[in-house]
Amino acid sequence: MINLRRMRFLMNRLPMARFKVERAMSKATKCTATLTGMPRGGGTGNQVETGAELLDAAKAAYNAIQDELAAMREELSPIISQLERPLERTVMHMRYIEGRSVREIAYGIAYSEPHIFE
Image (cartoon, rainbow, N blue to C red; front, side, top):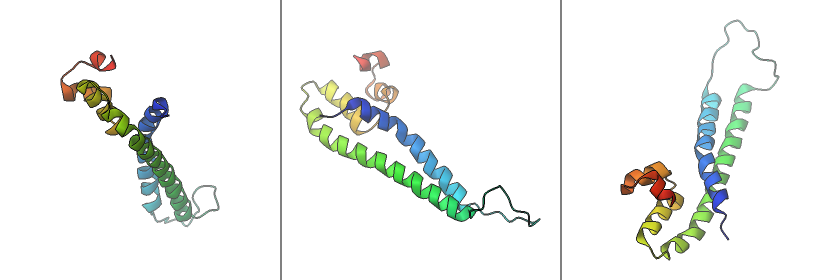
């Protein structure tokens, strides 16, 4: 049984996970020279190693979300294709397979947002 609430939760978390990967990538690749020779920060760890660890963790979290969503979409796709009404089929496909928001769906099929929720 597919948990649609969990699926929507993961779909909502995916952009933030992508942002965390991009931020970690930025931190991992940022190298600044210290002209004074004074150590920065209070940590004893190497900034490059710490940045690489953060990047690996962010990528792992992002990939875990993507993998779980892919499995759910694969399981849900045949169920959606069996829906009788074409409009329901289209809306469910756009929402859960393509991952579009209600606003994007409403705009794409020229219906109001409240109509999509029905």
